[in-house]
Length: 199
Image (cartoon, one colour):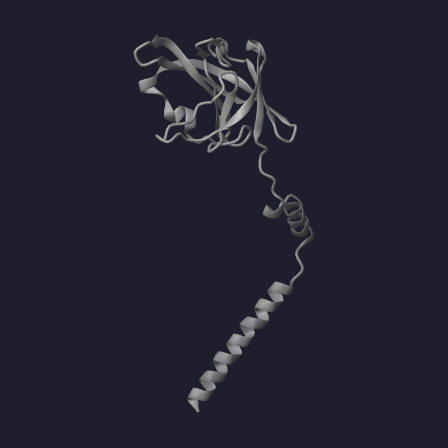
């Protein structure tokens, strides 16, 4: 008998909780709460409709009169970053961020060839405040402003500064520079331009 009464008490308590929950769930929100919820939902965008940042197709650097299409670069067999196959065409490092996305987008180009200057021959001339434009496949253009241009010995290449993720969109332009080593057949340094998204 006591057990039956106990079971009835538990059932009554459970029923009371269910009724309470259903009332809370069915309660109409206050007007200001409803408005806030509608505003939040208005800005919602489903991942199904998300469009990725278009790929870069061209770079323009007015100060040094550079206009080049962009090859898509990956990694070479030895794990290093590929370099453009054409001396007069720059290349975008495709495994990294796209220009305009958060992170450091990297574009590489040769400084010269056996026959003369190459696409990034004058890269070392860029100064703080100079503009770099990157055109994308959808016809849009993203603009960057140079923060600084620096030269680094190749054995002290600033990998973290060039490739490390950033929270805001950034651009790095890389070419060779410094003294030429005839034994190795390459330049001893790199010229790197650091740029940020134009506000």
